[in-house]
Length: 344
Image (cartoon, rainbow, N blue to C red; front, side, top):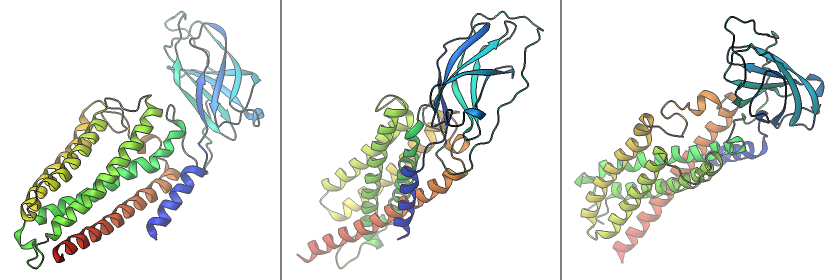
């Protein structure tokens, strides 16, 4: 029941609540000295309905902020603006901000260069002394992130699936360690209980590994533009998948039960250790697209805010409980099948 409640709660919030407001793009490709016009495009913003409070700013890399004039509000997400930039400003990058009382501050992450400016050392830079506001709405909403945008909802499904795989594979690993002891063979029916637990848990773990690969591939298609990329964690996940497929092939190829239990346990221990290395250790030291890898900030540092944690953590709990429940069912089914084989 706790599993159903946690997953139901996460599903409702994952699909029901809207994405937070954000800056999508700016139409200009470069700025020149003097008057510049551009279109600021937001996402889930309220430019039109909150026209009275709309302000747009252009900031350079030396912290000078220039307030733009609103020429026309085209829609809730588009506004034509104009900004005057002096030819004495020293800057290689510009960033764009829009403020409304409803959305707070939204920012375009792709800065525009300042080609054509005359750089004069010591020149006074016109500064409006106006700074962007920070009055984001306090209600729950998925935080806007460039590129991934709506696909961030997959965070509630893709990541908990991998957590669940690790938990279930850990159960399988511990059972394999215990299966290597001869005292675990039951004399009456020659069933190695711990080997049975290990294989049952590994089967469920492989199921969640498959789901993780599928959801990750779909996410990669929207975030990185391809179903599969040369990312160390993606490649490591595929190796882990193939290792556990090989584990079950090994089990099917050895008819002797005692020998199968020992070989499977040794292989499973090796596979688990390699899984930890491939998915948790090596990606930390290699260039990769996944968050938290090689200087790429983890989700918790830039978009897993307090409101999102209130949904993410129950999703993790729900999936882990689901994985354990499936493991117990799989174990009981496998045990009954072996007992029936012994009787027949």
